[in-house]
Length: 388
Ligand SMILES: [Zn+2]
Image (cartoon, rainbow, N blue to C red):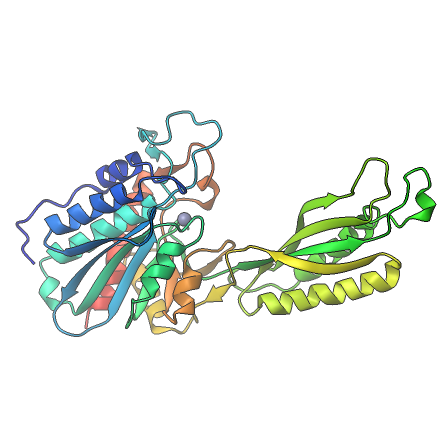
């Protein structure tokens, strides 16, 4: 690669430019952010392709090859951001820097990962020892992660031969190799309607929610004993309730939606089977009310994990040790695009700057020292992966 092309921008400047482009999903300008990245890569002699895969969403892919053969490593995160709702101290898409932090929607989730990934790749391309490296780095910034993961799904339809993928999400630069998933059963309680003036003639489905919620709490307490070493325990919590038909009638129905978080090793089917067992006991104890799973509300999908012994996980841990960083493996309590990469059989880890607590809230921000540190982290992983 020609090192006399453009100068590598400062990661803070690149992040500021990216946050300035409003990529709110739905309705935002993902294409603008994708083009910014494509122009950056092309300016440094890399191939870059902006792929508008539906009316609203785009992916941008850039790749750099080093020598012949070697592993194929993917850097991936997302272009879209969640809406900037709530009370912001400063405009969400006019990034401000104060006290060593940049404030703006996407500053952490996940442009805070996309920017240092891009700079790390450019540093590698321009490094004096680039000729000694072997392999290919594919940089991918995808659309629609926050709503339907359409970008990752589309990307993975023709992304083959991948030896390792790094997903950038705010993890405070902790290395994660597992994440939780979820399933959301909607439980329907069925009683019998009657005039509210004669409640004894009916069977009150709303009253039955009381013992059902108590049973769900007891179930959740049982789940807290099943600790997965990386993601913690599974959970079950009631999230929505609706019931009754009229203000003067004994309610014949009540629906409770349960958010059941799954840890690696569990499946939606195994969790639903446990809830069916709980409901069978509930029905025996609470006749004539009956409870059954009516349907499942949408969720992002199941949990996943890359084995601790996977060579790419070991490469990542070794790279973190190379730069004196914490290489302890951890897990993510929420879902992310890793689920789709694992479904495609790709060894995948998640690591990025920024804290989980600032995601999806007003005044999202990132520590700029951590942002700069992220460039070192991504570069160290790529360097170790591509060193023969
Ligand atoms: Zn994210």
